[in-house]
Image (cartoon, rainbow, N blue to C red; front, side, top):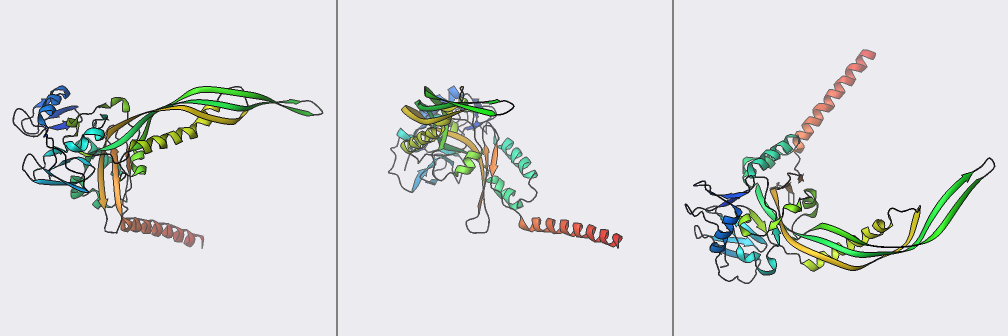
Length: 345
């Protein structure tokens, strides 16, 4: 079996969890709290040094609390034991090239996230109530998703023609004068914190919907932040993401290098050179609720930014309730029209 990491309370031996609100680690049994520095010391002594097994579609682990076998997908990096519910970090999933450069700890705890979820749904009158039933709420999970962040710089050079047009009017004629200029420009373009998902199964539209994150709060990666949450490991390589970002800045460059100045128009070619990319692999927090209706393939998601509280979701509609409401409104309108017609006649 592959190695796991758990973080035990030195006072009572229970398993510690990260508390987003207090930005510290706490024991749910003896109520002791620990700072980030104290947890780093515990982390150094808590890792199982067993070698990682060869990667498969499913992987097996042993829970250090109860000994049960935990079976996960090949991108899961942190989870809970299905039997004793102890938080477990799968250490070998985050070793070597898969070790993140940074992690953005949760700022919003579960209770606050649930409150925001209820407030969000209160405004949605026709959402299927099964979406926020008790069983569903129990699956409301805090998840760290993997992303690539890129800081890109490039030298941009423009060679083309600029025009300046002036109009002079008199009593008898209108004279339009257009002057042409040879224009050369150069400068360095810089793009910071470009974001791309690092997990193929993550829905791009939904994940983009809860951005942006305040990346200035990203901390150097420490596995202790994952304790008590779920986490996914990246399965997207840097090279493909970097090329995608370069293609994107090539699309932005012409407008950026042409904007401003004294010309009415600029026409010419923009060349990028000396492109430099600094990539970071980071874990970003989100609260997630998934609902599968009875229809095949009908899966609905609700995501909340674990730092800012921004939400995005695809919500199931209660068509029966919507139909009854529409019918009632239609009947009321028809009644008013009939009453008005009777009065006219």
